[in-house]
Length: 109
Ligand SMILES: [Zn+2]
Image 1 (cartoon, rainbow, N blue to C red):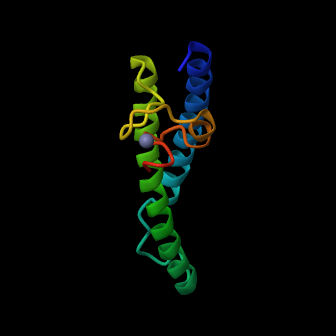
Image 2: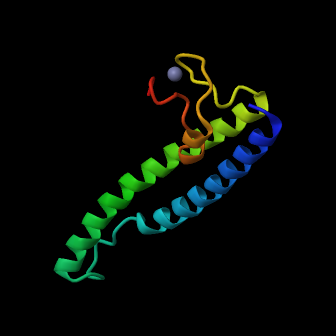
């Protein structure tokens, strides 16, 4: 991967990192413990619990993505970003732009 592509991917990853961090902050807000008192009516409390379950799952997913993006940034600095872990071939730039955290080419994924 040449320098221009590296710079481009670094920018994409950093932007994605920021978005993911914002998303995590919002989800943390939404996944705060649900008050056991009567702050909710009976039905809306059920809604709150359902939403919390969904948001907890989304939060876990975003946290994983954040780790992967951070690893991708390290790889760019080390110079081994964009190479398939399995077959060692270059991962097409289009795929990297779509999923900057990917470590495998389409064939190996
Ligand atoms: Zn591969």
